[in-house]
Amino acid sequence: MAMMLQALALATLAACPVSASYAFYVGKNLTADGSVLVGGTGEEVSSHWLQLFPARDHASNATITVGVTKNAVIPGELIQIPQVNHTLRYLSMEYSDYEGFPAPLTNGGLNEKGVAVRDVWADNRQELIDMTPTPQHGLQYSDLARVVMERASTAREGVEIIGDLIAKHGEATYGGNSHLIADQDEGWIVWEMAGGAGLWAAQRLGPNEVKVLYPGYIEDFPVDFNDSGDFMGSDNIVSFAVEQGWWSSASGKPFNIFNVYGPQDPQYTARDGGYKYMSQAALENATLAMAPVTEEDLMARVRDCRIADDEAGYGQVVSLRAGVDRDLLRVWIAPTTSVASPFVPWWLGVQSVPPEFGEHRYLTTGASSSFLNPDYQLQEASVFAGRVFKRVLYYMCSAPKTYLPVVTTMLTGFEAQSRTQVSDWVEKTARVLIAQGQREAAQKLLTFYSHTRAAEALQIGQTMVQSLDGYIKLTGQWRDPKGSQINDAGEGDETVNCLVGYDPDQPADKQQHPLIKRSYKRRSQARMNKMWLSNR
Ligand SMILES: *[C@@H]1O[C@H](CO)[C@@H](O)[C@H](O)[C@H]1NC(C)=O
Ligand SMILES: *[C@@H]1O[C@H](CO)[C@@H](O)[C@H](O)[C@H]1NC(C)=O
Ligand SMILES: *[C@@H]1O[C@H](CO)[C@@H](O)[C@H](O)[C@H]1NC(C)=O
Ligand SMILES: *[C@@H]1O[C@H](CO)[C@@H](O)[C@H](O)[C@H]1NC(C)=O
Ligand SMILES: *[C@@H]1O[C@H](CO)[C@@H](O)[C@H](O)[C@H]1NC(C)=O
Image (tube, rainbow, N blue to C red; front, top):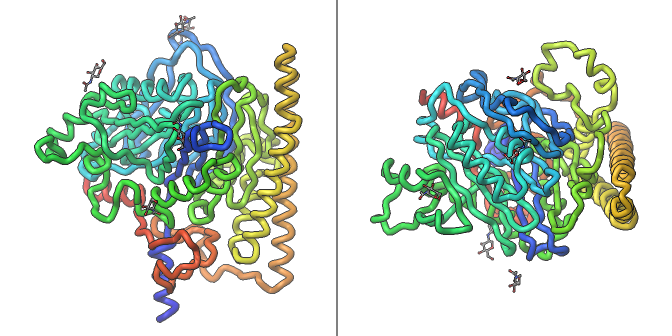
């Protein structure tokens, strides 16, 4: 019985949804070097791979295909919309699978203008989800993230682009979504609502703010938002709520986007999304407590084992500041969940991605029902970094008290070395070369360093896996699976995580982990989707 209760408690408290994602924003007045800092991950089951998209010119009649197909959780049809005549260079972690959306997908990344984008789920109230017309048409969250990277020179322009495109072509949704867009000066959070009415709201994040989207949220919002430089939204963002009876000026209550358009469940508040072990408020506090925040600090936040687990597809941390040459814009990327893999520095000036960090079939949609396309023969033959570090995760989290500190020390040691090399000579040399008109040589240097460091990261990952494998087997800690199902049953099943000191038999205030204040009731987009489907 005790065992059963424990299993139940675990299922309730430690269960995690299929997908979510999180994003951190730290304003430039709260960081050690005056940069705006952005970090986060995409929580999708799918494989994730690093891809560089060069700047390109396009014919005046060029189009792009956007939207979702009949396979999406809320079915839709793809549409063609005009391409712009020039798209910017950007770097992104791509992936193949989320809620039936067409691959390849992106949560965002960094472009050559120093605009960073992250996409994060942000549920809407059930009425909006029910209202969504089918088949739905318009740009979905990944299209919007991609278009912002391809077209935006500033964060504000990114918001305007999203607003314009939704007004012209609509938005295809899976139940509500948000984007964090940042540049060297500021951040913006954009919340795109389900419902097919083109509703969206955006709020500027200033130099003295920390914001964590987990999920995304916007609270008080001025009804005369057009007069404010700090807010943007669709023309109907206020009037629609009034028409639906969701808000009225007579109520005397401020117009609050979360209260009006968010989930109408008293269990959830704007800054307590009821998700995993840390609310947005707790994550924001923990980040703020680090001010002045460094890249290293934000890496620690992103890889915190209370949020980073098997669900985190990768880790990203980027600093945005004035006066950085476009080729020297740098993003630190962990090839899979950063609790088990090191951040490696990549620059926009890097010219290629090593095959080990490119697309492989492990966890890629369709891999179990089709043979390898011979075009990918050699790439697939190479070791896949994502797979190697998933192995680190699974071994490490089998006894986190023992292995997590050792692995974390190795990862942070590796990153400290990279940071020293990057600042001691890599970027200095690249800057000198660019100043001397030798841009191509600078790009080759950056490419050489990123490739070399990525190869070293992979080597260390393989060494960790071999050590953990040997240690676990030789010390009698090996456990065969007890059941027969290698895939979890989906929504509600626990996923592999490395929580330390978490005891499901203890009340939340007795937990060893200092920041676990209470157990968060699980909630997820997948559940919303099921509700949507069952209500149709
Ligand atoms: C930066 O933060 C400090 C301390 O909170 C504050 O006094 C100062 O006004 C801020 N600067 C700007 C430009 O907001
Ligand atoms: C665009 O125009 C070019 C040149 O007129 C033509 O060859 C091409 O087929 C057109 N492409 C599309 C997508 O219409
Ligand atoms: C490309 O588009 C921009 C803005 O839309 C415009 O100013 C520019 O003239 C266009 N260039 C070409 C070659 O069409
Ligand atoms: C906001 O301003 C824009 C451009 O000036 C205008 O087109 C739009 O109708 C205004 N929206 C609202 C809600 O007043
Ligand atoms: C975050 O910090 C504020 C201000 O110190 C405090 O009132 C609040 O309780 C904290 N919230 C959490 C969840 O830690």
